[in-house]
Length: 582
Image (cartoon, rainbow, N blue to C red; front, side, top):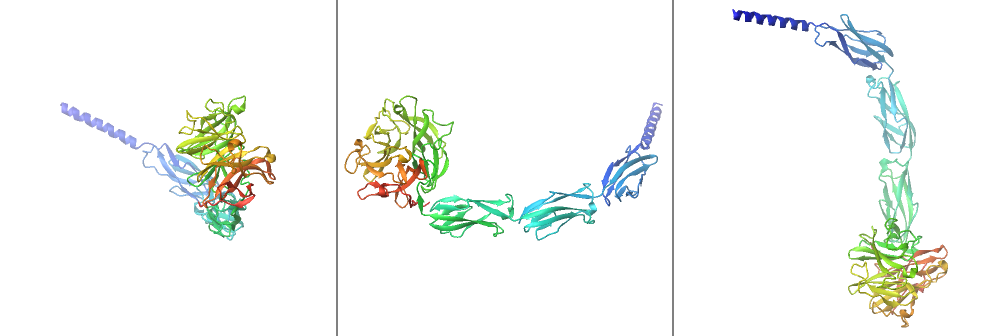
């Protein structure tokens, strides 16, 4: 009996579930969802509308499609809408008494091209972009057709326009089926021109300079770049990427031209000379000092007529370029005040050491003169202040006007000569060259008529070069470069007649003439690759710069009895350049 009841109960539950499921599957259609909900078309375009019953489980739903204005758009039984003419209409989808509408807008197809105008140089190209409105319209017109009205000036392929020759053209994009649907862009093609700076070049043998080529318009001529550089006389001047080097005396033309079109070019005349003229720079470079590095460059430093002590560089002692300064406002030495002058550059213990002069404190400046040092890993810096090496009133020194330093090594020891019109002295330095050796005492080697000492060893002699007279009276200066010699670093240094420099005797090396005044405070002597010795110094150019000490260069002539001089003992106006085989 219990088994029968359980069976009847199960059948009842199953019957109820079957009835519920049947009612769910026969749910009534509530609405119709159509996608897309609206559409913007151009004449000839189509869009397929998709109708979905709501709820989605509704069965046996059939949709019928109609359009309000068949002259604007047509619709098939499958919901495919075709735009016919411009205007607006609605497409209706219906099932039973449930209906939904979709708005259809038909607009004329238009084209927009960017950019709106185009400027090209001959050989260059640019891309035009065509966009249709409505954005997805005009399928029947795509891909668009590109044409030019002047193929001799500009051509076009798939919107890519190329400048052929100077002139004007119009590039037109149009529909593939309807040529009336179009848009045009004016194109101007200009010839590429090249300008070169400087427009002429004067070099000395062995020197080089950089020519810079620019195109006009600035960003034009991409097809012609990088430009090609050539020379018409490689025996006189060569060129690599605009860098021109003087090979021998003569004339040449350096030409830069387009990579594709050599007729697009510009030439620069180059004159190469084996002589130079004094002064060798137009910059103010008094009290020069020079050093040659292992890579063949010469570096020159001078009293700060150019603030912070200029750093100059040259390959041949004639053509100089500024590379920077030793100090800046923030790195100027702290152990002294005022201007910096009379530098002396050296390479000591694996670093560059530059000595220079400056006053310390107030009062009697002759007792407040100082020589300070700065060091650097390279000749271009950065230089670090290392403090004072010599101070006039230091108990160990006690020499007035302790300025104009010169560093020399001899017999494995390091020394410095210094002094200005209060005697020239020599003192031994510590091994680092940055201080005086603790037990050293300055020893006087020349009298009170001199300053700017420099010692050069040649053969069995030490030659003490100094400057005599007034250094800084512009064109009236009687400053001159003088010399004496000794077989010992410590003297006695004597003139040709045997009189001592301690007694202010000397031999003239360079003195002023009608063109140059005050030639003195020479730098280190430099030997060129032909075996000639050269001396750099400063002087006033009486005609062109009577108030400025300019950099001068002359060849030293050694007499048969071993004394240095220059031709006529006066500065040269023009001379053959030094020989350096770089």
